[in-house]
Amino acid sequence: MPKQLLFFSSFIDRLNDRFGVFASWLVLIAVLVSTANALIRYGFNVSSNGWLEAQWYLFAGMVMFGAATTFRLNEHVRVDVLYALYPNKVRLWLDFWGGIVFFLPVTIIIGYYSWEFFITSVIQNETSSNPGGLIRWPVRGAITLGFFLLTLQGLSEIIKRYAAIIGVIKIDPKYERPLQ
Image 1 (cartoon, rainbow, N blue to C red):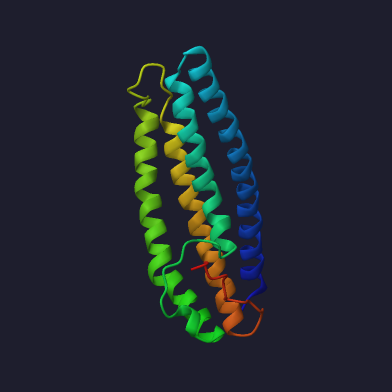
Image 2: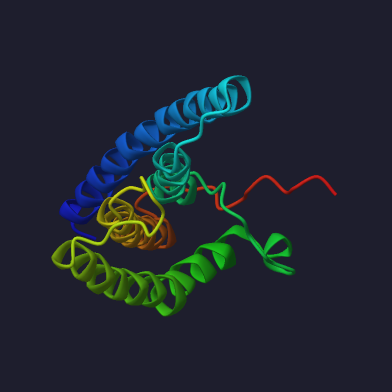
């Protein structure tokens, strides 16, 4: 396996880690905006659609920019019945082929259609139908960028799984099982 692929994988991991840190800051900002919004609304009986929409824009950013890092850390939601029962080598193969057959096609398709959605929103200068609402293209762009980052992380994980399968690197494919 060429070292350039592992270098590319490492670059993707570092890139997505930066977006993950950005997403974690968006959590703090969203909490502050939500708190201020509630205090102003109930304390002064004043409300703003723009600030309400800003809350869900921030939430969209948290999810879309944090998804790739969550995937890299193997902290994403998993629905598996048998995965935990398999030996590590089988898990690596399942992750490798699952990434190629399912993960990449889904993220590429969603990213492609979200790009069209984003471009249409930019061209039309789409805004909220609510009075005082925000423009919509930034949140549409966050969806596109988020799926692009998720696709890149999928490629990185496939590269790392293959490198582990052939013995170039070591990966522990286990994940922490949820409390039941």
